[in-house]
Length: 357
Image 1 (cartoon, rainbow, N blue to C red):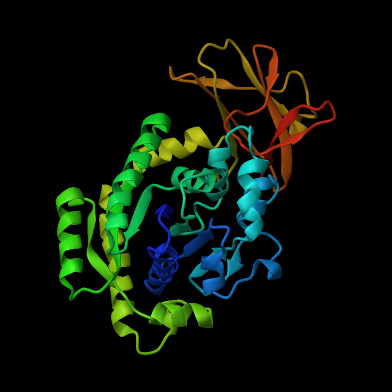
Image 2: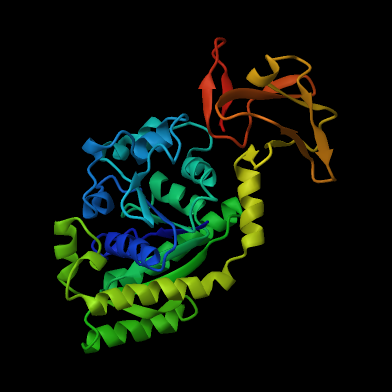
């Protein structure tokens, strides 16, 4: 699954319009798409007539509750497009997760479990750089930055690129950046000059397609549909289909090998068709065991084998569908899985890692 985060800390640049209609355009190309609304304003959800009051789970529950999976929170919009909606309470998540381990990778952990169910995930981020935007960035292999024709947007792109570079330096998680000129009146000299300046500053990242200004987007949101549900909007549909195809063509820029290694190192147990592969990084350890509900919390547990010289210990376990609490025993010390953000308190007030198969 290719995951694209649509981000810009500046409001009013058409970020949600791009996210919703890009997801719809990829669906029109018969790709299986998941749209994730990470903005507490819930505009992406409301644009498709999905209210948080009418669903059981939202992105708030997805980040907060370890037992809520991406599948649990998904709503079907069309044959090719599913949506995980947002709600205003999502705005409180940063305070609620303050001090918690791996809070920036909670979305990535949940999306990793539906990796084989979709061709694309498109994430609509909030108009700021905070915990929710970092969750989007840590989940994504690609970033689309919509830029509207204003001097403030032009200045903001440089700041946002610095944020992405800082993320890459701190986490070693690389993303491919694409800059999209959006909401533009193409015939004005100002717009032409803006595009020329973006070409000069960010030429290799600037997308060929541009998205026109139109009141049709407001009409689509009012009706609770994408632009593909609005009559007499062929030009706009063509632009978003062109955007989707251009992103498809850019797939060669994505280092899928590096992304696969990143996902494996980040998300702990990996569910395969035949078993669950548990792995933990302990290069200096002499012995590592896996224990949990599936071993009746035996102190012997299941012996893990060291994989080569990289310090990664692994074991494959056959498990039926369900929930399982587990821990690792490294040289006699019991610890929770440092790669798995999902955990629950046990009867001793300590955290057990939680796996949902």
